[in-house]
Image (cartoon, rainbow, N blue to C red):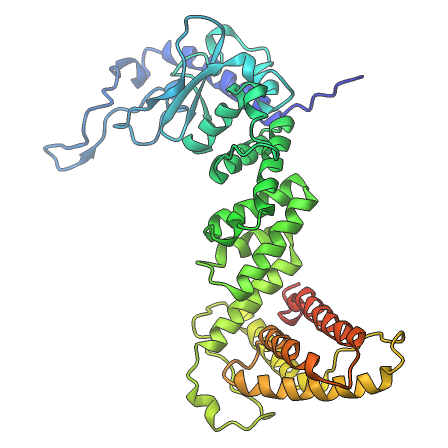
Length: 426
């Protein structure tokens, strides 16, 4: 079997640029007239001061070689990670600077399988310019220290330990740690750890008391993003189903993180649900005084959109509100259809079903007068009402009753799938 290694060109270009820049420094320092010759070694702890002339002065800058790896705040001293800054007693190491922390880890753990780290560390480099060879040349990563620490936990864990966290065992890792491992494994192309973390997240997401029912919106958005990036269709289906239900019928601290992921990846269903929930919230915020004197079937006032500054978004919300309000007004006449040809009394069942639907929809309309665009709320309330009344009807068979309730489900699902079209965002 032939193994293909995908090299990351960014690391090569960065290495060449740094080698060229550093190679030009000796020629500059050899010039006697250069002001660099008289600059003393900078004191990083020296505070900024005001001179006698009133001008503001700062400590001298670090050489470019060191500045590449130190934070902008020169008074700050990076700390060594207590678990993953290892001694140099044995083996070859590589040092990383992540957030405010230095990590010193075995190179062999980073080279075990194809990844961005393996590509970077396998490049030939001059020994005196070797990236990660010391704290001064630590490789800076844009991740957080907690994320990188969790990835190292997975890399250093033996397979026997990772196998404990399977479906057949009750050992459970925190969702935060699994997300950190999954995100960095995707970012740095560490396939085996990506698959392992995604499977564990999928296992937790499937549970009846899933974390998706109570986790903050930021964590839910991260799970959705990981599911899309990893192309794990089962996880994405579970996440979208749980989040859509929570957005529509439960309280979520914020829609912004989920909407950001949905817009970035073009998730039409999630975008439509998020926009719809925002519109319904604006619609519900109005005072019920506006509706007490409004007869059924008459046009309703538009929601207060003063909080939306973008004119295009405001126009999309107004357009959606008008269209969805029209759907709500026509709901009593929009009777879900179902196939009941196997029922010998199908024609009689259809008559009873049409009357039951209109009566339930009109009753729900009276209840929802203050929320003119909440068509999904009306459908849900209508189904709850019909589940109570249909079994009491003598004119409908059991098969037609079940088929009628399934028709409401199909109408709701079709409405959810097409919500984004009402907002004209595509």
